[in-house]
Figure (cartoon, rainbow, N blue to C red):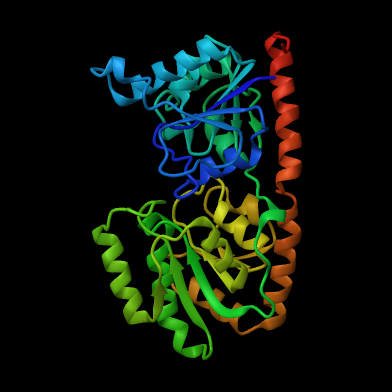
Length: 361
């Protein structure tokens, strides 16, 4: 079966600056899958057969970037004649591609904030033309809000447990934040909390990794500058953007990883990576995070006074509780291993083809 996977136009499939969607696509891709995306800086990720489409839109220079991207994808589909097309996070593009083969629209973010899926009528149209997959049940509920019940498949994000760096033993007495340095991710609450409790935890340190974007040349915003100034005062080390391998190594060393998102997280991949790395996790309850961590995290609201501070104090001061949470996290993470995820994806693809009435070539 030939599967054509289409990334969002701004999503980088570069091994140097891949975002969460690209990392997931690369993990799940079968050898014959063709992955379409914009041009990459350096080597592409290893999953599938990556095909950049930067040259195909030049003939339509008067059109918008998204329109040129769509036409480029359609040209590839017309020549490739895939059995199945998977479109990530772009409802309008998914509809346009449904002319060429059965389509699976895979949603990683809130559909009610996407063009082509904001209204109930738009979402009903999508369901009539293609198969919808969401990475969490929270996203599934958002998609089905205010429309009649309909089949929407939940396929959680996954992680390659075998590819993680070795877990440090003993672990460093370090508390870590990893993520975009934006207000939605609660990094300012992390800095605030450490500033309030750090003096009460001798021998412990706090660090944050991230920038405004998942790229080396991420813009230096006023928010980033303000948070880093506050971090200097609070005693939080800040390392800026780091490659994915470095992030995983830091998680494998740290005793505690804090995920204090204010944003309604569609899934919460950072929390999964932290659990799989053996860290004890503190997380908010927003969006799909509770589905990811289950009972393997301590919950704290970043904006309720003292909640985050008390959670940090409790775990840092309690070795047995920290160890128990770490062990539960490791067990929990096994449910999201890439081996099982690829088996599930293969089943979903076959089911979609059968329902479409089109046979494999």
